Amino acid sequence: MTITLQTQETDVLNVLSFNPKSDEYQCFIVDLTPAQAQHILDYYNKDNRKVTKSQVNKIYNSIESDNWLLDGQPMTFNIAGNLTEFQHRLYAITKCQKDRTFKVIVVTGVDTDTFSKTATNKARKPIDEIQRKYSKAHYEEVSILGDILKRRRSYRLSMQNAITCYEDWIKNIKNSMSVSGDYENLLDKYSLQRKTVRAYISLCERYGYLEECKTLLELLNNELDEDGGDSVTLAYQFINFWNKNAVDLSNEKRMDFLYAMLCVATDRIIARDDGMLNLDANPSDLEHYEMEKQGVYRKFLA
Image 1 (cartoon, rainbow, N blue to C red):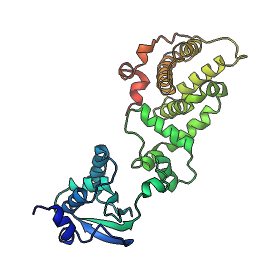
Image 2 (image 1 turned 135 degrees about the vertical axis):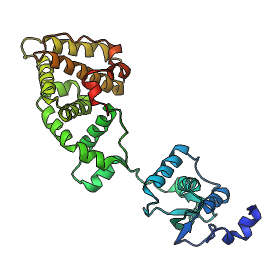
Image 3 (image 1 turned 90 degrees about the horizontal axis):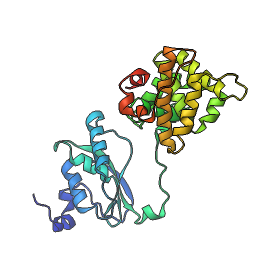
Image 4 (image 1 turned 135 degrees about the horizontal axis):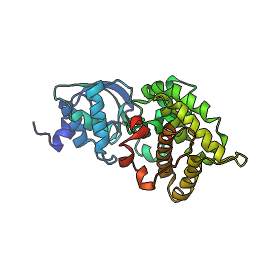
């Protein structure tokens, strides 16, 4: 059946089980089909934000992998009959098999201009999901977790994987925070990259290089101590290499650079644990495409 504008205005209940255009503020539940979702998008979505295809695909993939979850989020229409919430979900529903139905809460009679006059909801982040289950989890732990996943070149920390990843890594993270406390000079030097230092410690512990990690951190910490005594070649070259090459980098690039340096230096400590050998690196050696070929950097990848 071809749905015309006249059909929309005069015979909407033949397509939908409700009329989106209503002055009455009310709430009810419907079973929505992909065809009905498309009808709403065609005729009742005239005053909405631009569609983001990546978000549509994310929702669709979630439906396919985890089914349609009853999360309590409603589909809302203002008194003019225009959709105000649920646009991306509707597009995702239209991609599903035509014989499926989706239980949806519907609210009609919403005031117009609510987006411009009402304070927006606080966007949920992975830390919110983690703290929902683990109330004592704090920002620094989650920040380190995100950096661990980045260093492993795996998936990013998200609402969907936050709890699983937190449970998998929290022991290593807590230990890294404890271990790093022994190296005050080092943390002062790399205060803006602290989460990366702790992510590195977490990875070393997970993969059996914690002792080599502690040896390196101790050498670097002593090198940064004005009363630390004689310099050790590796530590001296590490600090000077950083001072020379990291100065013009953004902080994000500095974290990548420092992590690669720590991995290279760990390889040197494995070769000789007194640190009396050269760092033997140049900036181009620290790019991911070079680092992934060998050493602990390669072993730490997912």
